[in-house]
Structure formats: structure tokens, C-alpha cells
Image (cartoon, rainbow, N blue to C red; front, side, top):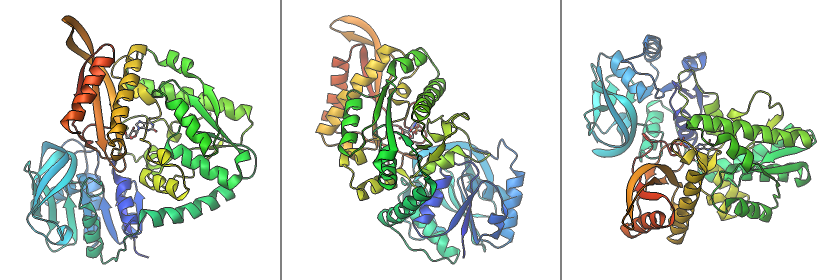
Length: 507
Ligand code: XMP
């Protein structure tokens, strides 16, 4: 059976390429190097990479790509892949960055760009720019003067500088459909519902085969991932065998702990409640570096969870690990760690209990669909993602009780307004981030206070995100209410930088 190989050279988005192909029913393998599977495949896609041909030795990569092209295989280089292609054909690269939304003009509406208009909006994430395609043909140019697509004449070989795999590149799917056509493969679009329904049947069978009796502990947070995975496992092995645990680490939002516990109870998940907030706060206060804070919280969380596992003599732990978590934790040799997310990948070595991960083949949008299929309430399905370390990663600089309180109060004001205005559900996330400092004048007094940075985001998967700005009346209300009602806040700003280049959480 024919398949496409995707060579992951360390891109943050490599697994999204595979997701796009899956939704076109195209078989693919994701590899972290030029393996035999790549040479045996029918067509090859090269992902982006943090590497730069201006800085790193990429001769081995080039040699492999030349061999693949000489085999006559259809080839698509994405981002870094586009740059390497230009280099192979004698082109020129310079240092010039493009991140996020970018307009490109299309010179040749055919081949990989069939179906595109003469100008398109795409998303970029690169710091090197192709300015000469050598003997390759430049078929698209960005508004910043970078060659955004290349065709190698007489060969089924293309490069695109933008990321067709991210949802914000509106016509990204067309690139993969065109590549399938170029590769002589037929594709058929499938829906999220179909994919998830099939997956559900498989995961039920998998839990049945893994479970050999005994107790299962599951850490719940109210997030859709942990709720759906706990709910499914309870259905399969019986609720009496599953012990849900809610650990309060003290970084939750105002009223969130009570809300979550009530919502969970309503669907039959009644967790053991462990209030470890004092311990977490004591251990993290005054830590300046966000990465250190993340690690301290992750480690303590794992210890607390392990205490319950030992006490209950449980044999298994359920984790709401998603497909991106799984892929990102076993990253390729070329990838860079952006942040230490505290999930299964962060569990320490001593955490030796069998893990069940019912959602490990799914993305967040698919998990929400599964939640719908299971009949879970809308509040749980549509709840915004919330980072494991909670408000602790929404504070810039030293963590202090005062800043934590500001983050909590500002978040409450922000969410109340967004919910009342029916904006909340449109958004992927809404953040209130605390940073220093702005001189204020409050009632004729000088006051040097904190800045609250509001970040409202539109996204389907959190891999890329666009900012959202409400109408002026609402912007004004958010800014006024926070500055007037939260002590020691002297300025409110709205962050209008997309991801990339800015990540969603500030640290
Ligand atoms: P970034 O900030 O990396 O975030 O653009 C992408 C998505 O992941 C969420 N996030 C986390 N989720 N544990 C989690 O479970 C974490 O440590 C963590 N840090 C960030 C973030 O809120 C966004 O939705």
C-alpha cells in the first residue's frame, strides 16, 4: 500500500503534517531521520526545523534529499525543507524573519499551488529567507521579499516556505491534496466525527486488554482531557475500580476548584480532594525563573499523586496524554524544548506504575468531539485549556502572593465580561498575565504598580493562535474594571502578537 513519509527535522508542527494527511485518508509515517521507511515510501515530505543552513552543517540532510530526488520520488520541503531545496539548486538564503500571518503572491497557479488565488494569507515561522531559488523556479513571493514556494522544473519536487499544516494557513489542505495528486495518490476527506467514533471503539478494546484487575488512579483537573479519559475508563472497567483524585496546587482561578468539583460530581466523577496548596505555594514562592517554577510544581504534583497510588495500592494511573504530548515528549534529535509542560512526559523515573492513556491518539479538537459523543456537558467540553501549573505561569518575574492574587482577580473580571458578552466560547483561551511596572496616578497620588496583560486567542489546536480584539466598548470595560478594582494595578495592555512568534502562555 502506498504511503508518504514525513521526515521530522525538529519542527514544532511535524505531527500536524501527519494529522492533515490522516484527514485526507492518506497513509503516512513520521520518522526522525532518513530511515529505510523514507527510502521505501512513495513520496516524501520534509518538515521545518530549528536548524539554519547559515549556521549549522546540513550536508548530511542535503545528501539525503538529493538521493531522494534522484530516485524520482515526489518531494515536498516545508519551511526549512524549502530552504534546503533552494540551496541544493544553487539558490541564496539570507537572515530575514517572518512569523505568523503573512501575505504571499502566487505567480504560477498550478502544481502544488493549484486552486490558490493570486494573493493568499499564509502563516510563517522562520528566521532565514530564500532570496534566490537558483535553477529552481520561484512560484510565490512573500510581502517581505522571501521566496515562499519553489518548483524544480521537470521534477515532482516542490518547496513551500509557509506552513500548510497549521490551521491558520487557510488553504493549507490544498497543498496536501495537490501533493497527493502529484504523487499519483487518491485522497478522501474524513470528518472529525468519523475519525473519533472509530478511535473510540479501538480505545475501549485497548483498555479492556490492558486492564488485568485492581485499582486505577486518575488525576482530574476539570480539563477536557483528564475528564474524558477518566470517564471512558470508568465506563469500561466500572466506576468502582477507578479512584479519581483532584490535587489543589493553589494556582487555580477564582472559584474554579468548587466549580470543577461540582461539574465532575454531576457526571459521576467524585474525586478524592487533596488540598496541597500551602505546600505548593511555599515551595514556589520567590522562584524567578518560570522553567524552575514549572519543574518544581511538576515534581511536587507527581509526588502527591504517587502518595495516593501507594496508599490505595493502585496498579494503574490514567493520564489524559494527547497525541501532541506523546510526540513532543519523544522529540527528534533536532527539536528544541520550548517549555517543560507538566504532563506524562514530565513524570520522574521513580514513578513506576502502569499508565493508561486513552486519548494518546487524539488532538484537543478531537477530544472535544469525543466528549460530545459521550454526552458530556457543554461546560466541560468548551472549557478553555488551562496549563498544568495554572496561574503560576501567568506571572512574569518573581512569584509572590500579591502577584498571584492580582492574576486571580483580573482573570475573574476578564472571564465574567467575556461570558456575559458571549465571547468566551469563541475563544481558545483568555489570559490575564501580571508583569511590572507602570507609573500610575490614582487620585492625585503617584503609584508604581503592575501591568495586567490581556491575551485573547483564537485557535483550533493551540499550535498556532491569532489574537482577538473585542469592540472598543468591551476593551474599555475590561481595562477600566481591572485597573479600578484590582489593587496595585496601574495599567492594562492587550497583547496582539500571534503564535508564532509569541507562545500562548507567557512563560
Ligand atoms: P504554549 O504556551 O506552549 O501553550 O503556546 C500551548 C497550549 O498548552 C497549554 N499549556 C500547558 N498545558 N501543561 C499543560 O497541560 C502545561 O504545563 C502547559 N503550559 C502551557 C497552554 O495553555 C496552551 O493552551
